[in-house]
Length: 197
Image (cartoon, rainbow, N blue to C red; front, side, top):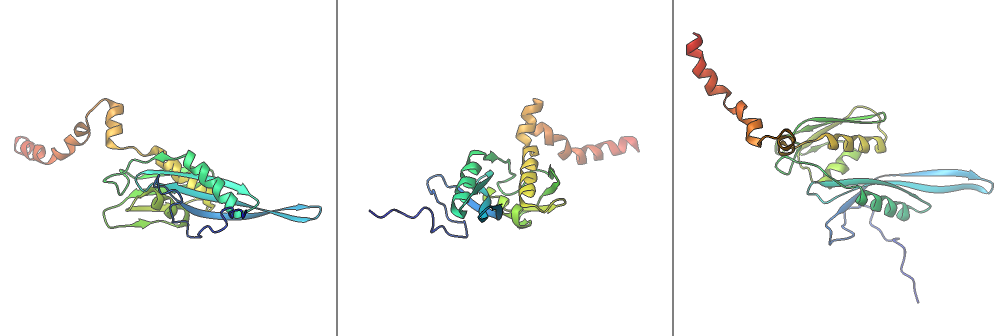
């Protein structure tokens, strides 16, 4: 009886849904080969960093180590699926507000963008936004270029993101009360102008 290959024929582009039922896609951010020097020579292992998301506002990341590349990617993907978080998005395409995230020496600034801007971000951050399903965002990495630190800094920024509804619930107000006064500033100012003059 022939045994099936253990994930040997995996595609390199990482775009394909391996489990089409849950709609989660995964992207390989980086693979690092490490060598351990032993008596007989060198023993190689691989460390993979993977981000997963459903392109509908949920995203997660995970790292995995193994002797073979496919096994390291599998471990990283499983960990990423267990650590998925939901990120509030404005109109399903961008952030509600600008936010900064830090992890270790890594620092990133994420800015909301107008429709049609696209994803303006470097390698690791682009993978995060594509799996998240965010279409318009501007990101800048200011600190470490280590992919692990950049991805973790982005997730630290996501944890600081808040939607108007969540802020209103936390403050015990309605969403209209948060935005209402700003829209009425113009007419009120015009009405008060003759009285002051």
